[in-house]
Image (cartoon, rainbow, N blue to C red; front, top):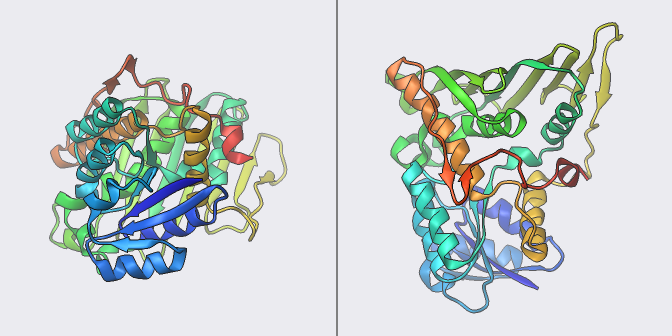
Length: 350
């Protein structure tokens, strides 16, 4: 039985606690939050004990792994405490607010001999995983362009720390990073980015919008939009190659469409099922399965650091109005190679 502590009893902590509690061979033993009443409420839902003493919970013998779902500016503190206590760590994205912070977290886990996985959950959405698998099969030939959108209301209305870029990283580091990470997974590293946003406008405290153009080293060009200025949440992605097109739009009843020259209306794939496993449950299942079998994570700390580097480059470009070359992430034996040894797409979609 794998015993897990949930650190952070907010919205994502609640999602992770319920997901972990539903997994066979996993028991949520503790919920820790600086708001003990909130911790106790969530603990009662999953049959766990509650505490406001995060350090005390991390040092307990009845905790084998930790799920970190605190505000981003506290990720490093909690991850390093967990590592020092000998606990394996699942940490929500973005891994950190800075690259030195991300490197320090990875190094702390390496020194302690514990494993670190980041919660880049979009890789576990069946539509996005299926697109990746089809791209690797050459379903649309040589890819030329990709357009991705992630539009939402500003979360600061009920979670005020999001409105403070010093705590959340802002729109690009917190929200756009989902699609930046996914495109790295598909196409590898980026060689240059150019971006614009509204973060310096007077409305930036409650509204923000950003758009980035990314040239990948393989020649693919990505156009990525993110918004905290829309009503409601929606996502879409369109990948165009010389042999066809793949398209997903969360507002359509058909979750994934392929179109090829000469086809009539396209092929429909990945039907939506009410019984579909939650991507949040799927990523935690992956975390605990890989702890059990020793195989690589799909989203290890190094991958999360490389996606953070891309997000920071996009943010720097938006701030300066200049094209930016993302910083390369070199950890361990060499640079990150997206997808290399990081688990199979087939496993995620199974």
